[in-house]
Image 1 (cartoon, rainbow, N blue to C red):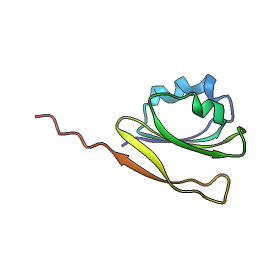
Image 2: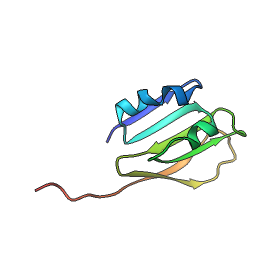
Image 3: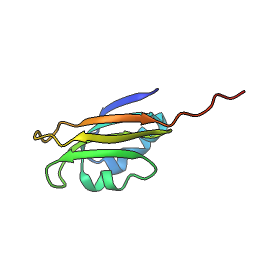
Image 4: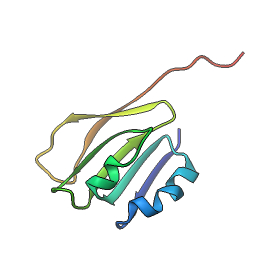
Length: 91
């Protein structure tokens, strides 16, 4: 499993190719706006923040799905469950 933690410091839409090149299974992205998060396709993920301003996103791909466990009263705290689709081993 590959995990990336990245503070993109805004401008995620311009920088997403850098993340895609790493192809992590799970990515924790700080300072990503809600519109930029909504523009990501082919991933499972959750976002928290205030309005559409910079927030925190956790993304899953390569068979990994991310789901929020519960809503947190704290704006930049996400409790999530990561699930993986089990695939048979090649023979």
